[in-house]
Amino acid sequence: MAHFADQVKITIDGFSLNVIHSDLIVSQKMADHHHFSFTWYYAPEVVIDPVNQAKALRRYMGAEVIFTFLVNGVRLMSKGIINGLVSIDRNGSPDGINVTGISHTIALDDMKKSRIYLELPLQNIVPGILAEGPSDFYQKEAISPTYRKEFKYLAQYDETSFEFLKRIAFRYGQWFYFDGMRTQFGQLKNSKVKLINNVSLEDFKIQINLTAHKISLGAYDPDNAVNVRSSAMKTSDGSRDSFSGIVGYTQGNISQPELSIGKHTSNAQDKEEIEQMVKLHTAGQDANSVYYSGTSYFPIGLGQVFTIVNGTVEHELLAIEITHLSKLHGNYSCEFKAIPADVTAPHYTDVEVFAKAENQPAKVTDNNDPEGMGRVRVKFNWGNGDTTSDWIRMIQPHSGGGKGFYFIPEIGEEVLVGFESGNIQRPFVMGTEYNGQNKSGYATEKNDLKVIQTRSGNRIISDDETGDVTIESQKGQTIAVIHGDGNIKFKAPKNIEFEAGEDIVMNAGKDVKTNAGQNISESAIINKTTNVGGILGTSVGLDKILNVGGDHNVAIKGNLNKEINKDHTLSTGNKIKSYSESGHETHSQTEIQNNSAESTRQN
Image (cartoon, rainbow, N blue to C red; front, side, top):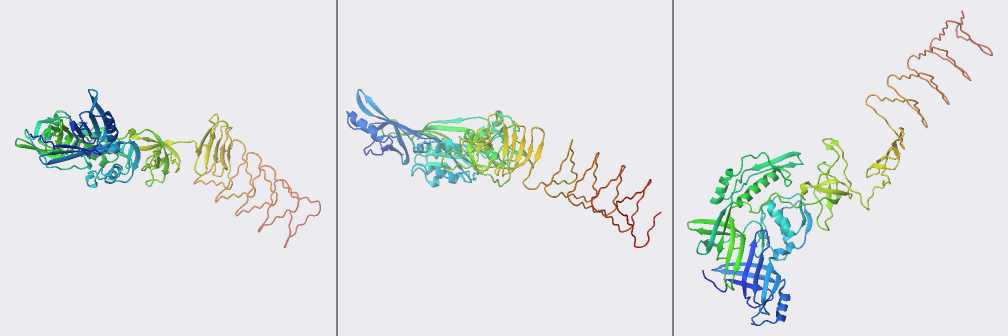
């Protein structure tokens, strides 16, 4: 192993001289920030002026640092930002600075945010987020997600952009890391580094981990109203690494074959999603089956694929953790942790991860559900970003096919939104809320009124003080009142119409009164029967007209009395017959005339 002064070079923005250093450590890990530290002997003087030391502390805080590692033609670069400086005092005099720093990814970890992405794939979402960081933070060709499905609804909630990208990478099995100079998302980089054990590689170790890979998940698909399930004992397309194969082969030694009893997940809502979760979980478990570690004297980049030659056996590996070291100025080595390069999902895959959300108010933006499921879209109170949801379901007192309680809030109204299992990806409307700008108008000291009122003003009012139940129209006109004393009143500004396919039966314990401002018309296609137990009285202010198409029969058990103030005219198209069992009397204060066109007979 050779040590050359140019194996490690440090460049600090604003400092033009060669950076003399010791105890350099650059720690790199996938889906995480990189960290570095070193001691910097920034001044050539033996005795350093404290004033100059103070100037250095002020000047280089926040400066960019670039590390260049070059060994036998293998070159690797990494950069970061100084975020900590500590002055060193030795024997009462300044003696350099302890420097600590972090990768540029920290720019995405600066502030928690909440926003929503609708109808977008990761290929569009991720570059947009990375573009919010430094201009040279990423390259488009380095953003190549393997999960290409378009998200109907994806929320970043109370997370920094870095935390959000990390969660999405965990959930959907995407490689996410800072390679030292640029951010990678989705797929991996390749390198041509080959390490030979005991030559360019020392302390080589292989760690095999036997853990259960099995999983069984169940979920609910609300669009199709069905339960969905998926399960697997192990991955079907895992690594071909021999040690990984052993772990897969011996799964039966530590796990039972039973898969029918699984766990619930809120991260899937259809068959495709739950099958994808099972596939990713088993692949992620497979990626944790074997770890390779060691110390290399050639630079290895995080996320790089490299080859280790161990005797006659070669291992193609993927670096998941790297620590670059330079104990003294110039010399270099790195410690690595790696997994087989042909794994099909990252070792940190976690299909159950989600952002936890609490119940919160929102405002309805749309209630015209294209599927007719009574759903609404809402806008959350998360600031000025994209915060409008997809169509979300709403709790009703009762629901079912062709039945239930169908009350949908109006656009602009406030609702309370909950989340299934606390998962930000699964919002639902719990109910509506009044606020200081939108009050019911029915508040009373004793809470006497219970009211249902629609947008147009139609309302049903139940008054616990009077016992009345009132139905009113949109113009404030009372249609019906069920009084607390037992009375019911119907009132219409225009017409009231009753229609029955068969009978209408009306019963009154006492009187039935009918009043009309003008006419009363009755019509029966067949018969009309009127039964009166007492007196039937009819009073007509003008004429009474009776038209009978057939016979007119009158049966009277008592007397028939008629009093006519004027003439009584009787006309018939045939005979007139009058019968009496006792006598027949005709009286007149003047004369009686009997006239016939032919003859007159009286017997």
